[in-house]
Image 1 (cartoon, rainbow over the protein chains, first blue to last red):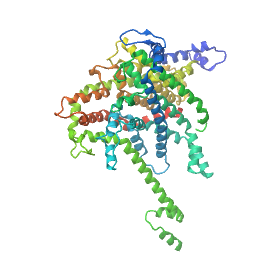
Image 2 (image 1 turned 45 degrees about the vertical axis):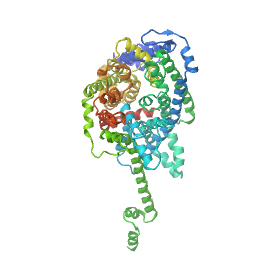
Image 3 (image 1 turned 90 degrees about the vertical axis):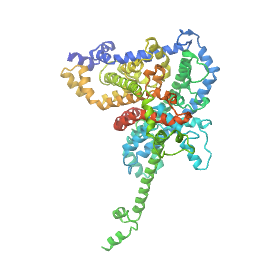
Image 4 (image 1 turned 60 degrees about the vertical axis):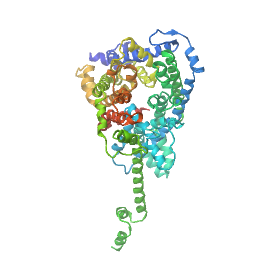
Length: 317
Length: 317
């Protein structure tokens, strides 16, 4: 038994792929991952194919799907005004929230990473993380309530300063409320940056200080390249997350309809109804929207990976 | 002697004597003052950021303790003169509090136990068992992290629909048992990889089966990582809104997140005449705080695991 196992794992030369695949340990490997394989087939692979098929059908839950070819896509890309609106809103949200989110969580991580003086680090870190752990329904209620035009504390501050408070939910400021809400969840980003900052070798900073580098130069030439993989990770994740964003828009019931249509809400609205986004296009149409989002996200991610070569330094860490 | 005396007198201001004694010049004194100023500014900044993170929570608490009249008072009242703790009573009486608590708990706990069990099995195989297709399959696991959830949403819904699992806890309890999520697998695999192979080989030589090695050697060593997975998925389950929103239309099955949305209309029947709309915010906020409380407490006791989990994901890049 023991010998067989050793032979299968150690003596690579002369053992074919198929022999290796049928080796004892490989069989045990498959036994261990069987639940995952079933899960992958049932909840990922099959649904992927299924939604691609549905996207070319007209399909309401109670009736069976009816083949319509590329009609859903044609309508979506040329006629659907809601799609245009959703695409614009999601793009604006992404452009505003991703860079701002990265900048603010990096700044806060730098703040917590000061060598001298900060006591109670775990306490501050926990405090900054609180918004992230709150149930989204509850926290978005709280968030809307503080921006309430009549009864909110933000409006009071404006009045206290002798200014007329703006109505956050009926003007263009509405999109900033959503951005602010997403920035408010800076906790995880900050923790990742904190780990990245602590991973930069202290020697580099000492060398820089001997060479007489000032703060900005140190940040530009040591800190920034050192954490560039973290920035890249946050950037990729942020893009994927914000192009799909729907939670916030869904809960912020005070938002005007025009401002609350995002790519995500469009899928839900068409599939299950209830967004007030015109008529529900059914499961087939919703699948087409989902695939368009998927394509957009994939293209951006790919460009992102190609671009990474020029500014992400892996050897530094 | 004289020099010493002069040196002792030199610092005009008290408090910086310690700095001066070190070198005797006046620059360290200035540097010390600058340092104190810097520390002060750091804490000032930390306080400002804390205020921003805590503000919505504070306002929710203040609102939950106001009378109906105080909620809509103009200008807003910062903190009610007589806190109305009675506002918390309707949360327990008018709302099916314990039913929703039970449902929330089933979804959160059942899902996390499943995720821990199946993700650890899968991750162990990917970290420690050899198979020629292992790395290719692991790439597949990683690629599912990037997959937008929308693409699979509709076919997965239809699968549950066909198996008559709508309005059951099935959609929340079955998927976690089949793989436990790509993110959990990835995190646990990273952790298992840090455990030296010698330990496993020793157990193998003693004739232990792979499953015994997994259960009796790996799992006890991986307790912190398993706790991280458990906490993250528990929190995810507790806060989840869209899963229940799609799969549970029967009120008896609703978890807190879904029930909170309906609360406003539920309490309306029991209100004194003339009380409408924003006025009931005190009870909505009381309920929001109550459902957030267990998660906040859990987080403060276990934040170490959260920080570790986030750090491991981020550092891989």
